[in-house]
Image 1: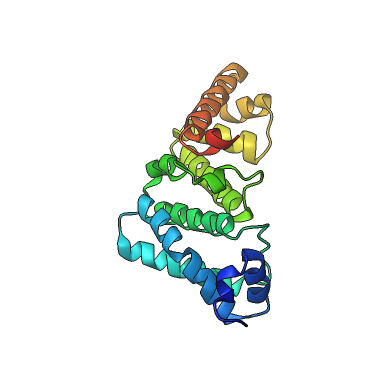
Image 2 (image 1 turned 90 degrees about the vertical axis):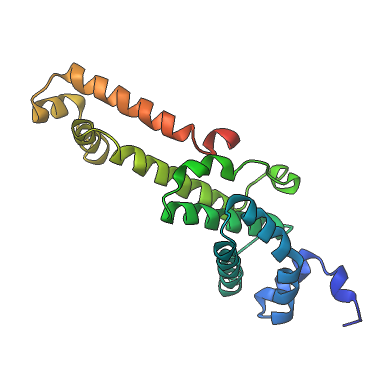
Length: 196
């Protein structure tokens, strides 16, 4: 290798070397993107110790999963998706879910302009939706939670639910409407409406 040629290496070249277990390629990817990722995570998490842990976890995961990860083109959008996924998991574990709404704000142009979000980015988004819906379900009043469980988990009809709960089909229908409204309200606090 010529002196200084690593500066000219493309992400694709580095990635191909990394997939073959080249630690030098891993180091160059790390040096190329660690500051950007640290800055992005720091915008969303104030605890610098947590940020450092998330960065370490991100790059450890990159190394361990190098055989299965398939970024298309530039590596940064994929790494950014991995970073956001870790931020979402951090908030979920620490029960700071209202902050999810700001996670997707101010996307870097190279991310916002991509035709297809990376797999990690989509995974983070799906986990966010599942988490918010889980919370919406747990916050339902007991009777509505019963209606939800019977309708959406046990696939009972409105008439069957009414019979099981000794109430009218009209009451069950109204409760299902309220449940849907609560779910829509939960989804409005997520990135879902920013991207789709």
